[in-house]
Image 1 (cartoon, protein in one colour):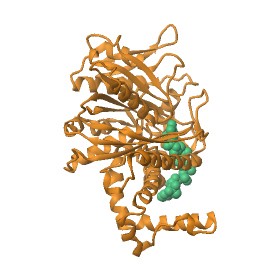
Image 2 (tube, rainbow, N blue to C red):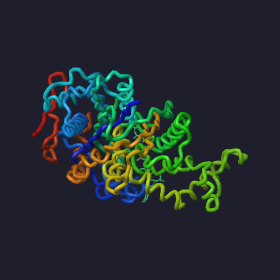
Image 3 (tube, helix red, strand yellow):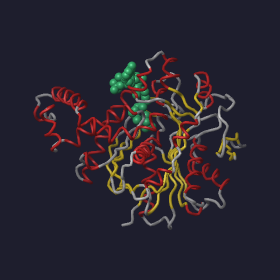
Image 4 (spheres, rainbow, N blue to C red):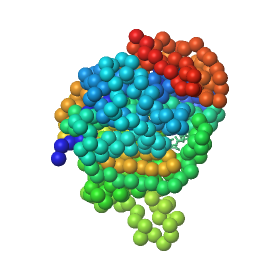
Length: 445
Ligand code: HMG
C-alpha cells in the first residue's frame, strides 16, 4: 500500500509578541516564574492589526506552495481547521483560495473546500479527511492542503489570557510523502464535556482547572483505544511524542501519566522497583481513595527518577521549543509540536528516517486522538526549509499599552483602529470590508 502522509509543512506566526515574564507578569502582579516554570511559556504570538486567520493561513500556504513548486491544479482539496472563524456560512478556505489566486496563475475552482470545527483537534481531523480522500482513490493524483489557523484570544482578565497565541500551520498531504507517513491505526477518547466552549461568542467560556483534568482523562482513553488496535505501546517504540500543547506545563502533566502507562508490566518498571517500588494496582487496595493516594505518591517518586527525566528530556521536551515562544495556536498546536521535535532532531544530527512519532491531539468539548507516524527519507530537507526561528526573532515586542490596543483591535465587539506595529512585506493583509460584510484581502509585495 502506498504511504500517505504529510509531504511538507510551513508555519506562520502572528507578527507581534507579548513577553510573558517581562511584560505580562509585572502588570498582573505575578511572579515571572509562574509563566516560565509553571506554565512553561516565555511569550505569546499575536496578530498585528492587518493580520487574521485568513492572512496567516494564506501566508503559510503561499510559502508552502512556492517552496514545493506547486500550482493550483496540483491541489484537489483545501481544508481549513479553525475555531476562530468569523462567518457561519462561508468557509475560511474560500477566502484563503481567493488570496492564493492573487499570486498564482490559474485557480482552485476544481478543489473541494471546507472548514473543520472541533476545538483544537480539528487540525488533526482535517489531516484524517485528506488521508481518507487519498486512500479512497478520489484525489486524481492531486494533494490536499490542510491549514490550521487560529487567533487564540481570551477575554481580558480571564485566567486563559496567559496562554494566548496566534499563528497558522499549512500542511500538504500526499501519496509517497517526504515528511511523515500517517498510521491507519487511531485511538479516540471522546465525551460530551463543557470545560471550554464559545457559544456564539468570540472569547471562550472556560473552566481552566477542569479543562486540565478533562484533557488528561480523554488522552488516557485515546491511548487505551489506540493500543486496542495497534498493540501495547512501550517507551522505546517512538522517538518523540508531540502532544497538543495549550502550554508546556500541560504536556508535562500528560507525559508523566503516559510514561507510567507505557512502562507498566515492563522490565523498566521492574528496574525502577528497587528505587521507588512497583506501580500501585487497584486490586491491592481496599478503597479507591487509598489507591489514589498510593498512585499520587508513586507519581511523585517516578517524576524524580533519572529514567523518567532522561526520557522526558529526549522525547517530550524537544516538542515544546516553539510552543514556549508562541503560546497556544489551538488547531495548529500539535502540528507545531511535531515540527519542534523534527527541528530538534535536525539540529542535533539525529537520524530520524524510519523512526516513529506518537502524536496526541486534543480538542476541548472534548476529544483526544492518538496515532503514530513514521518519519520519511525526505524529512531533513523539509525541516531545513522552515524559517520559523527568523519569524519569531522578527516579531515586534509589544509594550503593555500596545497589547491592550491590539487585543481591542481583534475584539469583534469593539470598533478600534490602530496603526500597525510592523510593516507587511511579501504577505497577504486584511484590506477592509466589502459591501456584503465580507472581509477583503490584498497581497503586499
Ligand atoms: P492559573 O490559575 O492562572 O495558574 O491557571 P495556576 O495557579 O494553576 O498556575 C499554573 C502553574 O504554575 C501551576 O503548576 C503552578 O503551581 C505554577 P501545576 O501545579 O499545575 O503544575 N506556578 C509556579 N511555578 C513556579 N514558580 C511560581 C509559580 N506560580 C505558579 N512562582 C490555567 C492556569 C491553565 C487554568 C489557565 O491558564 C487557563 O484557564 N488556561 C486556558 C485553558 C487551558 O489552556 N486548558 C488546558 C487544557 S484544555 C486544552 O488544551 C484545550 C484548549 O487548547 C482549547 C481547545 O481545545 O480549543 C485550551
